Amino acid sequence: MKDDKPHRHRGERDHRRHDTHFTRGRKFSSEDLQLMLLALLEKQPSHGYELVKELDSRSGGYWKPSPGMVYPALTYIHEIGYASVSEHSNKKSYALLPEGLAYLEEHREQADELLAMLVHHANKMRYIQGAMAADSDAPDQSGWLPEFLAARLALKRALLLKSTADAQEQKRITAILEAALQQIRQS
Image 1 (cartoon, rainbow, N blue to C red):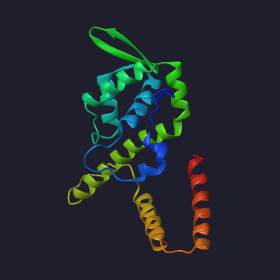
Image 2: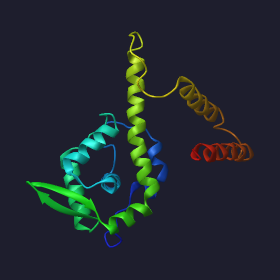
Image 3: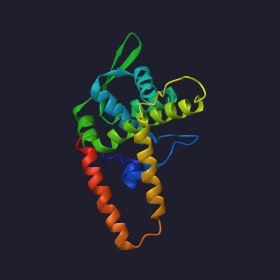
Image 4: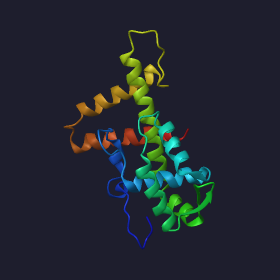
């Protein structure tokens, strides 16, 4: 994470890798976890267990990093000078230092994307659970409107059908998508 210890985030090699779906096994790299921890520490100093609970909560219980992942990441963040540590009643509390904040600011977009992925997957899992319980009277808990889901699906299908488009058509589609992205990001 620090310049003298080259730790590349996978997002730096392939920033759009987060478009993939969660599969079995490791959900995030150690660098991703370190960046998410820095972002959470920016909000408030925390104990490791509080950070595990926060990540679990944001993902709706879908991803709960083990203490065996979080504590080494916090130790590393502390050792490279991105966070301070204080001990109270045998509990270590971590706080973001200015150098850690500077690093986080340099990687703000990636950190925001990682945390947004947790919420997205929580909504997706609630949607799937709701669909599986469709025979029951349970309301949709995903927070996604049916028209929102239909529009996303229609866009995916339209892009799939344009997989063999020539260069001119790809440029036209790119312009449309970039304009839509600007409008979506304005809110």
